[in-house]
Image 1 (cartoon, rainbow, N blue to C red):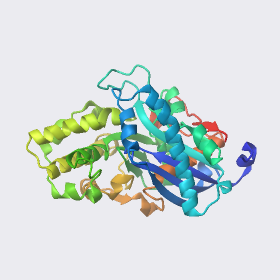
Image 2 (cartoon, helix red, strand yellow):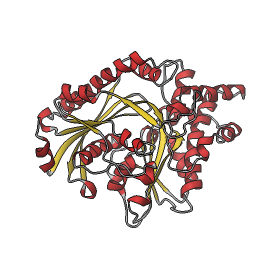
Image 3 (tube, rainbow, N blue to C red):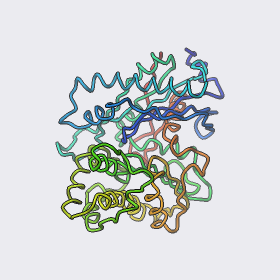
Image 4 (cartoon, helix red, strand yellow):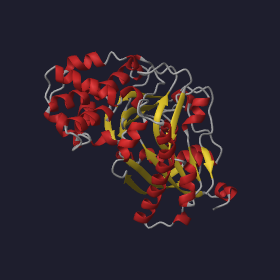
Length: 399
């Protein structure tokens, strides 16, 4: 292992960022060359791969996310097993890229969120009194099995300071995308959709960020149900494009209390997971909608929650000039086309147009966060998360 102080002295570092999101479809791994730190950070993506979960693992993770099926013994075991899979993802990308383990200085691992309870979160079970979050994927296992120092568990320090624990990528968005002339929006459409807004020539405290609501989560859930698991997502938005959205149902769903909350705010599978999606599908079927019309309606819900959030909370103060889109939703042509139609005064583009890979963006973010932690730099933005102070994020584990 490289000495901790030797790492600090290096001008350039090779860092692996690991990310598994609310879609629970695999582990994104990015090898990133990072020069400098803080506002001097420069990044170069060397390699990116997605390591798919073995058969049955996604279902086991999703079972952990539900209070009625998340047994404590399963959580305990899966924490270590997912850590092993994250280590396998590291070995996988190193083998595919031809890079040796000894060339990697650091790993930054987001882990796999199985439950997230920001302040005053109403769930089907109770009103959470103590804000909390839980990511599994034991970093001690990652560090041991790879031989690489690992920083993980980034969200808890922000929540300890009264924050939502998300979105943490907002700090990285500022480092990489702030512009002196244009107001930039960074929209990530994963299982949940989140948006960072960087006002033109703004400082840290001007950044606004929040989850806007469901991204692909509900769409994926109803497609899995409709096809009995033979399909897990709407490839390129083809099924939504063949259907017609039912606006009366969307108008009803838009009354959900979360959509009325101002930023900062976060949500997750606890609020918009399988239970919510099945209720929406049931409502679609009661309204006599075909399968494709149901998919189109849930897709349009995602689109309208994003657009409504922008129009209600962002547009008047900071009209967005360019909206860069990342995450799985960037490949859904129906979503992209509708965003372009509804946000007529905004240039809607895949973030690839900026030189940053749309698929790799969040894995890159956690590589950079690890580098920031190594240098003792705070990695959260209180204006984005609601924390009382800026905090150094993550826990450092030696191999």
